[in-house]
Image (cartoon, rainbow, N blue to C red; front, side, top):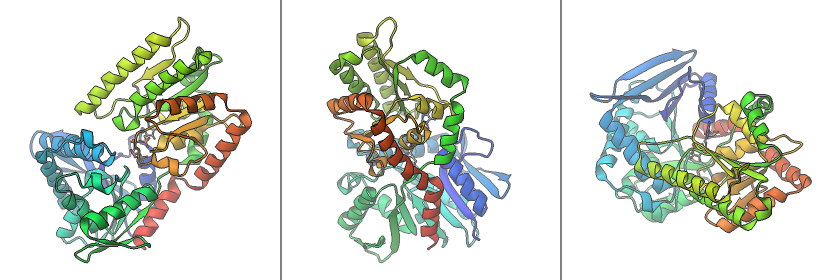
Length: 454
Ligand code: ADQ
């Protein structure tokens, strides 16, 4: 069997306990195949980029590379997070058009490719993750690497006209043709990419997923919706019911209904609109005052990027405003928390909630929606209110689907969730859960790797 080489900006080292779902899935894949995880070391150094660090753990090597302060700033804080992230989330208004960060992004990708090429064996299978690494395969090909290389985009693929707004977009997105397989979260993402290939790059696309570029190069693309470790999360959630922090939360609620939101503090997650929709709900349904608490967990993320600092200030203002207007001496409608929690505790919080509020303006998939469903008590499941602009909506039609910009619509969905009879809650939840049990994270990685080697 060939070795697997996973490439991602972030490498979850074997001693990292707070690794997320993707990290756990990649570790499992590496354990199965043996191989290497390659990416940034997490270190920013004063001098030049490129020093490698190796760590062996069982049949897996962790190979990480240092980046200079300037390279990191241009590649990660700059082009990846201030240009590509907003562009891929349909936010042309937030795209930063600086060329120096685009150059830095290319330079760092070339360096990753050069260092990775030195580690590759002839029959390794390479799986590259996400928008930080789009040009990687092209650089590797230039260095003579002929291995199977797959790419998975965790974020959305916007419509072709938006993609084409990026200066030099043909160079960047055309570089995806150097992969053997390009994976997207949903059929819609795949569709939009295929139109881009036809309309802007003069390529041909075929019904079986093959694409042919103007220069004759062929590659394949497909939809591979990511999922979660459903069984594990269900077990964690059940066990978490007796944890002190979960018990304290429940006790603090009394008989109140709990609505929960869990998101990185990121403008794609639609938090200001969600806060406003909750306020609209309080305005329009005064009879529910005092009976519901909205808990929003939002760990700070990308705090070096100005847009994220502004978002944090905005949310602090909104939470204060809503509580100032509506709170009573014995009731705080919004509890807003910027802390990280262990995954175990988080699943206990999900299970304690009657309503899950997942309303991103755009999201590749959104794993919180799936984790919320997996964590519920089958006898008394909570209701999921889900944005139709999350990739997850394509597979979760039994949730209450909303347009996150439509404050009245979200407020009505909250009222509907609040009033939903137990039988309907169970019926909707069972349909959602059944699909999640079948389609879990193991199936996702198997499907992608099978397609990559086919
Ligand atoms: P993210 O944008 O990070 O991922 P998401 O899919 O929701 O979004 O995953 C977030 C993860 O962080 C979840 O597993 C959640 O449990 C965890 N998390 C959030 N808040 C937390 C807290 N306070 N404490 C601890 N953990 C917390 C990107 C894309 C998504 C896509 C994933 C996977 O943007 O669309 O679903 O990759 O492909």
